Length: 219
Image (cartoon, rainbow, N blue to C red; front, side, top):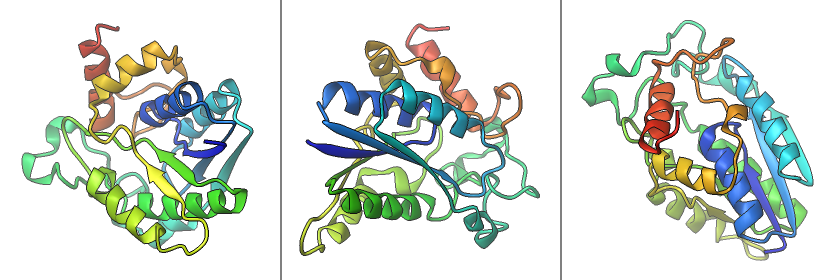
């Protein structure tokens, strides 16, 4: 694999994936894309920049599509200031398949742009860190989604781009264990949906992060 592009958010999953691609897949040229999509905070983007530098990424672009947050106003607690991010304990089972923290078609939009960037670079492989959430989930983080997306991308008549999501069947605990093997510095990752100076510890993403480290035997 000569060139590859990683969709890099700055969270645990995408950062682990970045180092996995770098260390285990023997890529000659590694690129990364991050997005400002109207999210409430930029903590994760600071982490993405730090990790891209450590991984020796040839080029890391942070793309501003903040209009996206305005376009989907009222639909997601991650982009709308009027919607509060709930604690995981407050999300009932009925809504855990598509909670208020779901951002409509965010992954589809970002992966489409990332595929465009990859094709322009002459890269045929895009990676993103979708994983099997333990407590809640999103349809655009599933192996089924990746399969259908690649069916569309394969319509390209010259140089199709393939999206890889090697963590879709892995739990966050599995990802932490892999990251420890890769010497990932998880202090320079951000998971909290709420932002702030310190993670809240109670939002769905914080709870899953803490649980993953606990299961892996790491404080």
